[in-house]
Image (cartoon, rainbow, N blue to C red; front, top):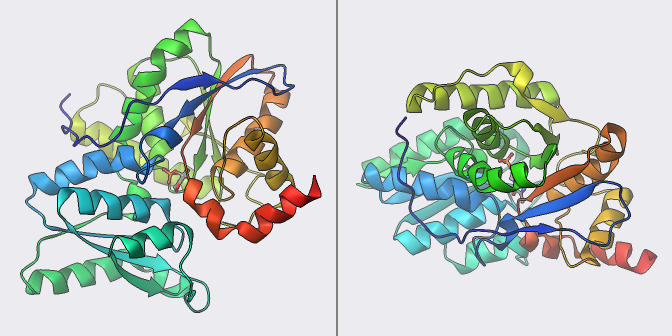
Length: 324
Ligand SMILES: Cc1ncc(COP(=O)(O)O)c(C=O)c1O
């Protein structure tokens, strides 16, 4: 069982009990939102492995993609700067690109990433677009490393296998019965599931989807896990039935917040934790409903970050503040 030695840019993150919520369930929060400033959130754990692989392959340029407020692309831009890679980002944008940069995009641009915009239709063919672009870079003498959306492949997932290892002790000590996380491209959940399997942890691992469908993610996560098991020779098998995904909290679609979610964001912020409207807000809101149904005693919510996107949702969040 030999994986990849990651580059290191993150700090170990605390697991704090969230006090002040009137729930029967004790909620702990794995604070991956605190793993660094500009690299805050789940993408850093994945990029520590992906950048290590890029270095191993002697690449000098990162090519990746995401939504216009992609946390992954912002984190990739920071890693690229830190480790001396050129950075090219393909960002999906509805309508014409904003004239004033905000949130994650402001950071991408400040860091000097080479940003290109794709329409939603063009974005559907992102893998092809990036591969063609990488070919052009190769002709110019560059050695590109193409990272899929969200850094979600068998290499990126290793970062969340590490996260599960970091949680294993408290899972046993506190008799945690469930771990919750947001699912946006599936890499985080895949890594956590591999960790659960390898460490034989008896927990329900619940992924709250924030876009697409449960079927779409089951297939994607299963694929990532199978490739990881085969490539890194993990002594475990995986079945699609091991994947537990929760629907019902997407709202009208990816990146569209809704009033109940915004109310939860406001409520949790009063306890000192900022959730984002795209991922963790929906996932946390979903978890609060689900723990009532399942009567979990002790749970961990993996806070996967996303702080910068709140600045791209000023209008919606301001309304939620004024409503209370
Ligand atoms: C803040 C945040 N949380 C959760 C997720 C979901 O993680 P994954 O893409 O690994 O499913 C993402 C990215 O998609 C994210 O940016």
